[in-house]
Every structure is written in C-alpha cells, then in structure tokens.
Length: 131
View 1 (cartoon, rainbow, N blue to C red):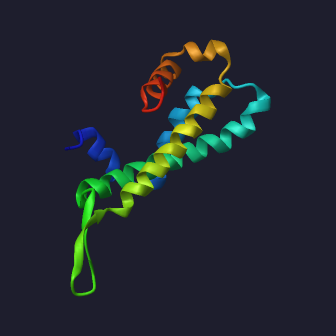
View 2 (tube, rainbow, N blue to C red; view 1 turned 135 degrees about the vertical axis):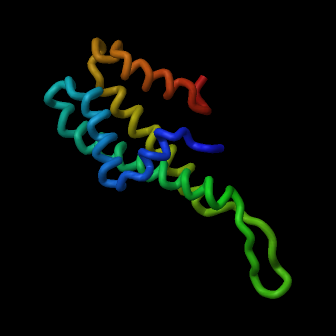
C-alpha cells in the first residue's frame, strides 16, 4: 500500500523532528490537564511520541521487506517465516494504545469534548478487541 505524498514527506524528516512534531500535537490536546496530572502526562506524552514515530519506522520497514522472509537452517531446512519486525510492530502498537488510553483517561470531562479528543476516543473505540 503506497503512502500518501504528505506522509512520505513527513517520513523524510529526522526521527527527532518527527518526535517533536508528535509532542507538539499531543501537548496541544493535553495542555489543560490538572496540575497533579501534568508531570505524569508529560512523561507519558514523550513515550507516546516516541512510540508513534518508531511504529511509523517499523511500518516503513515492513512495507519494504514484507511480512515474511526466507530462512535457511542448514542444508535441507528452509522456508518462509514471519518478519521479526511484525512482532515488534504488534507489541509497540499495544503499548501505544495503552499509553494513549492512559492519557485520555487523564483528560478533564470538558476537554473530552474537543474535536481532537473525540477523534482519539473514536480511534480507541474502533481498535480490535473493543466492543
């Protein structure tokens, strides 16, 4: 599946630049948290930004390498196996989803009505396993 042109341009930026971009977006959404939640949220937002960019990198690798790869163990044992990046991607997506759910639970009720928060809530409700 080809990436949209703007996504391809975004991926050309350095990883620290992309992390910073995510930090800015997430900070804008979670900027009105109560003081007692801000310090926890800051660290969690940094983790979410790192996870999001790393997931993008993994997706680019998987798109280029495929979901499977050839292997050969010895002379007669060979075949196809799952690309190890796929397992890493799955694990990181789970952590990212948990991280975003934690952040969303920190939002005050009135902030949960913002368009950005609603979009995040809708995304979390659509993920597999949620009913």
